[in-house]
View (cartoon, one colour):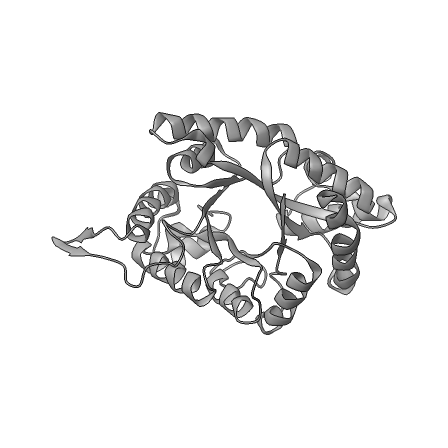
Length: 300
């Protein structure tokens, strides 16, 4: 099981190189960044953040979790992804999602929020073709991507989301389906749906694998870990999260967190991307617990 770490979105982006370097030294397999254009809290651009991380690391994989694909012209997203893959020596993995949590950013970018699913599907088709070196038609003129990504036939494409549409999108055009705020059983059922869709489109179902975006709270005191998870997720999502935290958020002692993450692994998540539910002042201790006590248990 690969274990990734979400780079704190509310931190100053200038701190990214140090955080990414430390994550690599601590043994994480992936560093990830999400993005928004306009949001209710500080949020960076994933391509820029991961380029900064690439400059100070050599092993760790770099995942956009997720790129809001409907807000980009697809050829521009392909160009940025291919460039980042080359800058990083072939370590980039492109996660895409439809977004929509904040309709204001769609309006500001001139994109109707109701079209986000359609634009994502169309964008994925263009990305896959450009990454493969194929030409796309632009007003009657063929156009290709140059330079191509280092990874062939393309950087891995993750499809994020919890809906059935995301499962089917992953089956049609993705390599990895990554839900969030779901139970291990939901991961297993969704992965089956994605693979069934892959087969319907003439793909080998085994080409589609699973991952999980895991909000996680760890502390030697399990009650304190649960309280932190409730507070951080309530602030993030603006609602009572008690039921969701207990069902879908690994929390508790390092032993409890590792055991819960292993349940997602057993459900088919070959990768887990950990988003620490911690306050800024407690982040260093949280990362030490994850790296020093959770990772060894998952890999042992």
